[in-house]
Length: 474
Ligand code: BES
Ligand code: ZN
Ligand code: ZN
View 1 (cartoon, rainbow, N blue to C red):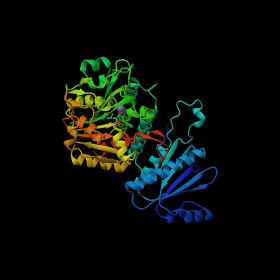
View 2: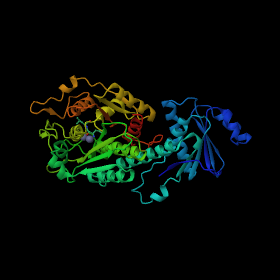
View 3: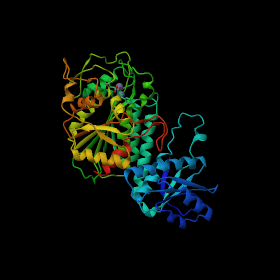
View 4: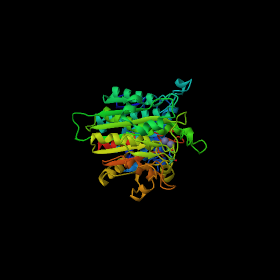
């Protein structure tokens, strides 16, 4: 863990100075050589330089005057690299001073520094030796309020938890363990959690979720979360729904692409985003009534696995012709989206590692969004995407796409045509909604193939910061 704290008076600690003008360096106690070195070498904006005093490291970052989405991301990344450097120097703490009077830069650099300190070491024998030394980031308190520090810490902790959940293999994190983890979140942040077990799902006739679970030895679960503070500003809840496929083999339509299964423990990235966002929201006590729904199972080709050609009766009574068992995410989400109707929600957002199509379209730099919510809601989400750099891009959602999921023997089928796969998947989901709704396909950004900036190879926790910011500004 890493904590961001208000600054203490300790002098002998490593420091980071954020400056917008080199004049600001003159009051920071550098000797003439150091001062001249910084003046000459700090040319580009968002570059940082290190003055190494052996016992302590002094970093200087130069920024442009006004914070923007782009520049805040640059300073997050500068912060991430500084964290790497501090750990190489085995530093335990660092103090961050802002000389620019732009609070946004201070919180962004602290966020980037903290997020970059993430490690997933659980399965190493010598985890202790590998653990980062950095434990505390002190941020100049006059520029950052107590609430902001609380929020930052909640976001960082929640993002780390989401990354852990994605990085955990299915040998540990099956559907029941995912539910246990969410129960744990509820206890720690004081929100309500209820887990529906296999028997309950059978009595409720959650046909989509149960069909996907048929090839599995582990039971399915459906986890409900609720954060309802007395101060809630909304009368009808906002609902977050997350795809919780703890492992996706493709089922009987076994994944055809070599090695594509290697990262399929990431297929509960939507569930991680949703549950951990609610965890952060509850920890920060945001005044919004939120409900979270996570249907969870693995998707395997075991003995009684659902098969191409099957017709499945879903929770809401819709019949679905299954033509590809690898299109399982929409099967379990459909039941959760139909279940969401009973809350008469103001808005429903689902997050899912749903399609390779979304990833192929825009890569891992953002999420694909579509749906039936108002333009205002989409714009707000896009704005949050810029604030957090978990960007979203809206895809068309024309009626014509729905033609492709018509079935000759059932109400709809779970497979569209050869093109626009992300959108036809969205159209399948739309069938189960009757409220304003946004679908967020996070197949691209949920997993990082390599370390980069404040992301490390593996689970990214994408969605946590996006949804937190969206709810905060709601
Ligand atoms: N979990 C996958 C989508 C995915 C792909 C997530 C890559 C993360 C990275 C999903 O269940 C899937 O298999 N989708 C299929 C649907 C197809 C069979 C209609 C796909 O996109 O290929
Ligand atoms: Zn699949
Ligand atoms: Zn999947």
